[in-house]
Image (cartoon, rainbow, N blue to C red; front, side, top):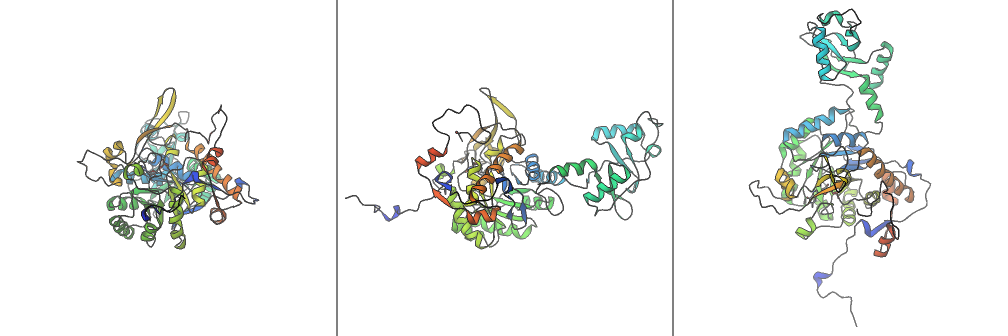
Length: 492
Ligand code: XMP
């Protein structure tokens, strides 16, 4: 008679599950998907309006994509395959993107000629400039309309003759609403910001205020700037300090195996040196979570689930993602530390399953690599458009400096043992429309479960286990797809 007993104790092993192994059990609901509130806490001090992060990969997140992510309510995490100085520049670019008060103000001096200022404004792409003396005291403001040819100002006249000298200024504490009221009242488009001695410290423009209004769901820090995260190597204190200094909201300790005790020691030390929150990852087990939960502001989960990852086949090690998230969340929730599920998400359904398993937010790479805002150009193969997407442990990424995530820290050693591949991903158009599909699908999942907020959804959701026949049933089947859906491809 056959026995279920294993041949050896070593084979008495627990089962670990991933996205396709489970489905959300539908429940009684009055929640319309559109009403589901997607706000979530992603680290101790940072709240997002959608629970979505873009991966710290050199084919995914640089300043351009990070700006768009934050404008849409999520968070971009800048990759670290760049110099420390470049990291600081990218952070500053994101932080400056939607700021109310512009700091890099193009100014004119009263002695310049109208022609010089006209040229300067054209070159800098601005349509007006405060006129300041040598001490930066504001004397007037000059704009395109002051120097049009039909006015009685000659090209060679000095700016002091053409400028408007009754300038409406405001102090540093001006709000967008107050600035707008000043603009309407005085029929002007820009308000110089001055200190107590009337010295110029910045500029608020109508254009800037209107741009900010367009992004009413943006994820912003308390000073109104867009939020941004930065990946740093576990031993890269210099990058962490530079990112912090430049204003990063979260430093992500970026490591393939954060249950390495040296990594934890270093992360703990970095945490004492920066003002930004520190998220630590990646981990995939309860024990790893226990080792970092006392100091981490967030824990990132994912050992080998990523689309371009080969960690599991190369090293024989890893954790299927639903189990990994659930184990880590069991520990993190008790300490009120947010959890981020990183990697392996192909569909919006996977993303909301990760949240049901206990994550507060999800991180995606391949989903965003094909968007306009991701680095790299569009390539055409066999008439279809693609963008490059590569693992940070791939040979190409390691050659350009990113190998230490995969413990290859000797730059002289050319014989890499990669844990990722270089690939191409279909070109997808704008990040905004990808996020619309992703978040819309997640909201739909919340509707099926009857939860209006992410914390409520985490509480209320339950899984059922799916057989392989059930998986087949879940996908489009027994048909030939004639038109591509914007949120589904059977090849994912
Ligand atoms: P997706 O599935 O969204 O995964 O494309 C993105 C995540 O994959 C991780 N990553 C890697 N993992 N080898 C790995 O084992 C690699 O070369 C590699 N590069 C990225 C990373 O966590 C990312 O967020």
